[in-house]
Image (cartoon, helix red, strand yellow):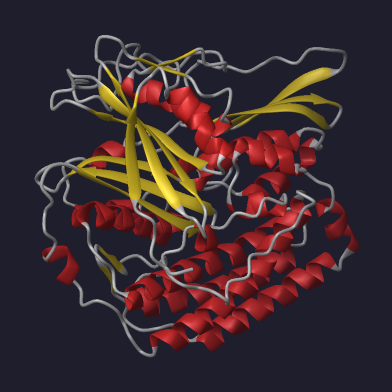
Length: 508
C-alpha cells in the first residue's frame, strides 16, 4: 500500500450502453459507490448528467465514473437495479431530487421524498425555484402487508424515547417472531448537499463535520480529499498519517460506547457503565488533540493541524480495559445466549445488499477502505478482523477486535510522526490555485461505520457546484430488515444497536 489514492477517471457513455457498461465493471470486481446527478446547464434548462461511480480495491485500485447526459425534455435513464441493488436505491434518490426517472425499475416508488412532498418539484435542480407549499403528511405507510393466521403488526416510531432522530419501523409478526420489517427513514431531510453549493472548499469543511456528529472526522476527511483531488492539491505524508490517526481515534470512542450499549440492551448494565467511563477518557484525549471532544477542527484542505499527539499508552489502556469488559460480558451465559444466533445477516445477503464496515465483516465480507483504498501506508500494523456467523455476537466480536487494531495503529502512527503536528493552519486553504473550468474529485475513507464517499464538482471560480455524500449508513440500513427475519420482537433493540446506523448520515 503506497498511501497514494487512485485518481478518478471519467468516461462518457450513452443511455443505450450504460447497463452493459455497469455490468462489465461489476464483473471485473468493481464496487458501486454511488449513482448521482448534477445540473448540466447553468440554469438547469439543459438537463442533467448522471454519474455512476465505481471503484476496484488495491492492489490494482481504480476509480471510474460513467457519465450519461440526460436531456431536459426526456428525463429518464435505464435502470440498473436488476444487476446492482445499491445502484437501484441510488436511482430512486436521483429521481426524487432531480426528476430523472429510472425506466423499468422494479420498485419505482419514492425513496427520499415522503408522499406529502409536492409532485413535480425536484429540489436539487437549479430551476427548482422556491419550495412550494407542502401538504399535510397523512399518507399511508408504503409497505407490503403480510397476511395469514396469527399475523399482526407492530409500529415503532418515528418518535423514539431518546435523543435519536426519527425513523419508523413496521413489523409483521406471528407470536413474537418477526416475519417482515420495513423501515421508513428521511423524516428530517435537511438539504445538506444543497447547503454546500456556492461555498469555497475551505468553507465546506465545517458543514462536512456536522453531517453526522459521531463521524466528524470521516465526513470532513472524505470531503477534503475530494476537494484536493479536484484542485490537484498534494498532501504531505505526515499530514496523511495524522489523518489516519484522527480516524482511529474516532473509531475507538464510537466502538467503545456502542459495545457497552449492546450489553445494556440485554440488561448487563454494569458493562455499559464501564464503557461510558472509558469513552469519557477517550473524549478528553480527543479534546487535547484537536481542541474538540469529537475531533472537529483538525482537518484542512491540503493539510492537517492538531494541538498535540495523543498518548498511545492511554489509548492502549482503554482498549485493554474495554476488551476485558467485553470478555467478562461474553463469559456470562445470559449475555452470550442473547447475542448468539440473533439477527443473522448471511454472507450472500450482505454482499448483494452492499453493506459496509463491521456489519459486512461480521458476515464474512472482507472489505476495509484502509486497505482497499489507502491514503496512508498502514501496513503491516493494520489487521482487519473478519467473522462469518453474521449474528449480533459476530458484530460485537469484530468491533471488540478492532479496538486492538486501532490501538496498535495509534501507537505506530504516533511513533512515525515523531512529534509533528501537521501543516500550519491556513496555509493550504489560502494557497490553492483555482483550476480552469469545472473540476471533480472523490474522497474515500474507512469511517468507523464503513466506507464513506464524497464526490465534489467545482465550477470555474473554484466554488462547490455539487457535493454528493454517501454515508455508509445508506448502504447498510437495508441489511437490518433482512437480518431481522425470524428474530423475536424483544431482540429488535439489540439487533438495531448491533448495526447502529446513522439517521443523520442517511437523511441528508
